[in-house]
Length: 88
Image 1: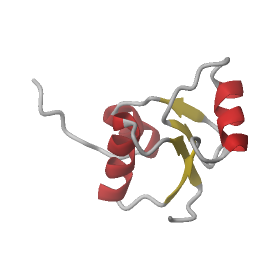
Image 2: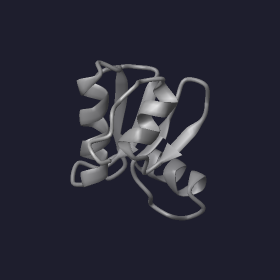
Image 3: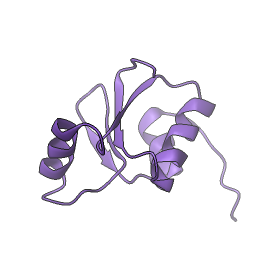
Image 4: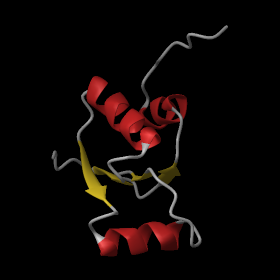
């Protein structure tokens, strides 16, 4: 696990969590992954942020902003990464 400034709250079985992690890995962006299935304090944080919903990934950025279940495009925009769409 990388101790980056970005924190991903998620689960190991969540497809969107894996996709977000793969996106950050591909772009060599450091992050910390916290599994809310095994960390009850982290689960409570996710529930609080998402008004009682266990929505993952919940991603907290260095500036304190949060994205919930973001697309790759939303991650790219937030991080200032220019990606081209495969769909025209």
